[in-house]
Length: 302
Image 1 (cartoon, rainbow, N blue to C red):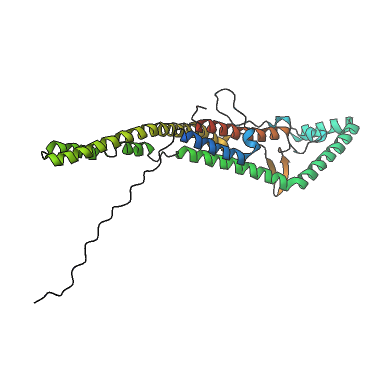
Image 2 (spheres, rainbow, N blue to C red):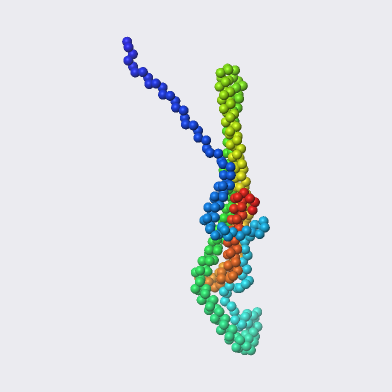
């Protein structure tokens, strides 16, 4: 009886998988080029501020500026001659001073009271007119101090990670080593000439590949070491200098501010020249710290 069942389909050939694409090598100077491109981009965003960075004197790290209000008492209302005369240790002394001042110097006391009243009114008008601005200035300065303190605290608890780039390079440098040892073991244990010839050909190809691997990895190690050194310098600058400095923003001593009674502003030191110097000092401080971080990012010691 004739078998009429269909023939099984032929076995399809197994297609070879696509060649493994080798990722590009890290080019020499890649880290330096990337850093310079990054800093150039940031400088363009900061504009004149980046160009106006003031370098600290010598190697000393920047410090917070001090605010000196001794150049003026702000806008606290002045006292008259009679006010000061009545500021005595006892009622009897106050009466004696009042009589001596008001009776013996009536004209002087009257003029002083009139002029002092004008000054008080001018101060009150100024404080009433600019109260919202003065309050905003105090709030903004306080917010800035708190933000610097929070940033300093964050810098003290966090580090720029290396993402195990050294471990990655070590694994890359060791890639294929086990296969090479396996080939050596197979050659040592094989006596068949044909098999040995095939294994030796594989070993020759492997040795050529390994030599090329070592050459490429040796060039990339330079970039890895450069990147690690830069990260280390940046972490040191952030932890040992910026963290300590900025964390102390809330303890930076006196600063420009206002005094209030209820919802009314009764005194202000924001209008003093020393307040402007203080604000400029804060600006220069932050620019100096940025300059130090730029130096560290470039791989140099601040």
